[in-house]
Length: 122
Length: 109
Image (tube, rainbow over all chains, first blue to last red; front, side, top):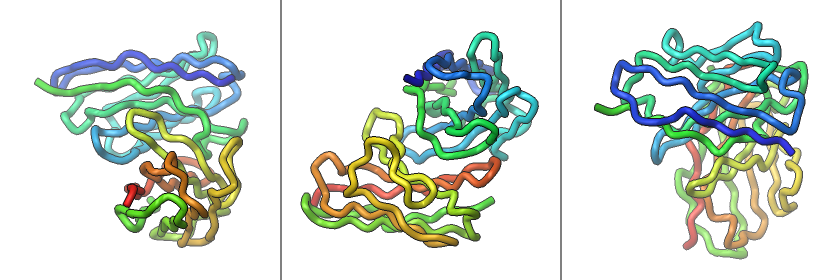
């Protein structure tokens, strides 16, 4: 069974940084691209970032480009999202999601984590 | 970037009725790379439909997807009490970026 467990959320001041982690199990982590998706309180879903299975290709939404950095450690089955220069509008639940097919950088989202809340406020 | 517009914003229906949710894309969605999700309060979204019409594992057959190009539809044939939730469409293409519609809230009338 696929399990994705996010951690690292919390309260941070505007302009600050936060690193989110996603621990994966139940599948061969190194074979799948992974994405981050967020949801602001009471709002809809927003794609944030993606990374290929070997980490060689990364993608970002325009809203976070230059401020967020996605990475992965396939030896630890862990996905990361380093968030810097945080703004109030980055406040959201951040979900880790697995791409369904090997060899693809995109796809539908069958497997989701439970999410971790990042709050940017003074 | 493909923009997805869902309608209506809110749909008020009674259990047993048929629900029809629309998702319109600003440009053609290649190879029907279109998915639908259901989300209940405090929960992560749940995949219902991918590839425009393929039901995900464990999804009841009262849920069906249709459409191609720029116009897609999620139909719930006979609403059960547990179906009242928010529904999102998503286009995923062959590579990022991914985009979501703004959601349709399905509420009990």
